Image (cartoon, rainbow, N blue to C red; front, top):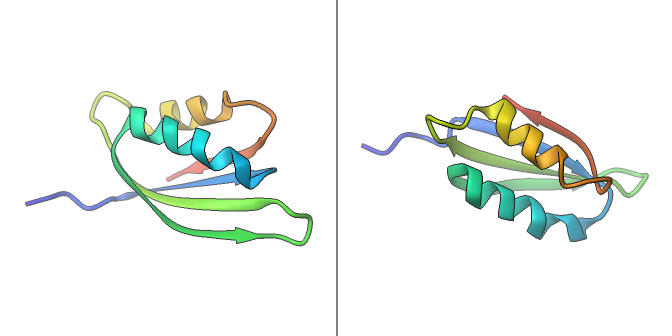
Length: 80
């Protein structure tokens, strides 16, 4: 049986154009992911929410660190 996508990763981005870079990291770092939603706040920041299935060898905090390393377009990353 397939395991659920049990980890939620929320990434706050300054521009929507950061989304392909974010998804590139997820594609490399996790087993499986899907975008479950995106919201935009009054200041124009977007929050992308992904449900992911982690690899045994790469914990959530390592994925979060890699996402933060994408640079200034990433405002915040939460993985739980």
